[in-house]
Amino acid sequence: MRVFCLVAHHGSFTQAAAVAGLTRPAVSRHIKLLEAHFGVQLLTRTTRRVALTPAGQRLLEHAHRVLAAYRELEAAMAALRGEGRRVLVIGASTVPGERLLPRYLAALREWAPDLEVQVRVANTETVLRWVRDGAVDLGLVGVGVGVDDPLLASRTIAEDEVVLVRPPGMPLPSALEPRELRRLPLILREAGSATRQTVLAALARVGLTPEDLRVVAELDSPEAIKAAVRSGAGCAFFSRWSLAPGELPVVRLVGVDLRRSITACWRRDRPLPEGAAVLLSKLGAAGGEGNAESSP
View 1 (cartoon, helix red, strand yellow):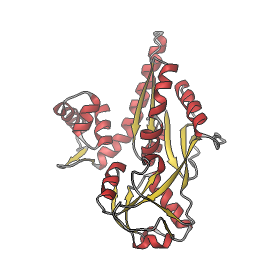
View 2 (cartoon, one colour):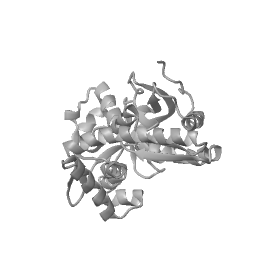
View 3 (tube, rainbow, N blue to C red):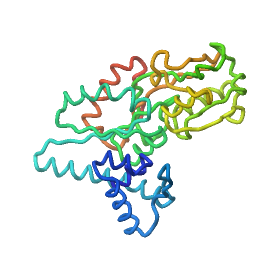
View 4 (tube, rainbow, N blue to C red):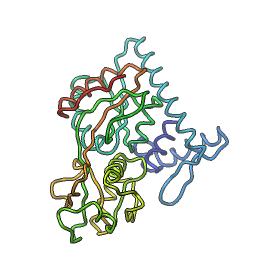
């Protein structure tokens, strides 16, 4: 099940094998054993990517819960044996997972040398599902107005802003009226991305719908979008944290508020692991104001 979850997350047998420390044929054998056990096809394989079948999607939902329960069982048995090894599983969307979280992992390890931290990176919609299902202990996501879910507690840990960038060779002024987006080729993140949600919500407030936009591509990788922008395929929206100084030309949208929060969330009905609490205190101290936990 762990191997299956890795394949589903990465969309690749090769990448899953690298993460799991297995060979690609070994990963393939694991998947075949699962398919033989359940009597259904779990994945569709193409030359470029592996995708979940409807049965695979259903198994993935259950697998996250099964593995979470197994981790709790292992921790409980370790505690009875008097062993101190602990595991903290964090789900993070792209910006907090790749730009914010890594700089604090060393400090967390200094505080708890016996703590193993596992980080999974996916889009915001997937991370929130992981938190709800108990597949991760803590979620870090970029959202426009906070996590609106009665099952989850949340805390703002940092502020971010989404910006529009253009290809280096595209002649555009440094500021645009929102209506001028209608004529620009745009590359958007996939559905489920918080960056996409933030952009569409902000544009809706100034009267622009998704149908008004000239979308030429949707990609699920920020680095792939950057490459497409550099090639001249179109403009795109990025978190400022995702851009190095001067990496791509930024175009200001007049009168459009693209600010958002980076939010930590966890299940209300489960105690927050001590390691997660320490990490939140460090992230919150660095994130500035607006660091208030949501009320039950």
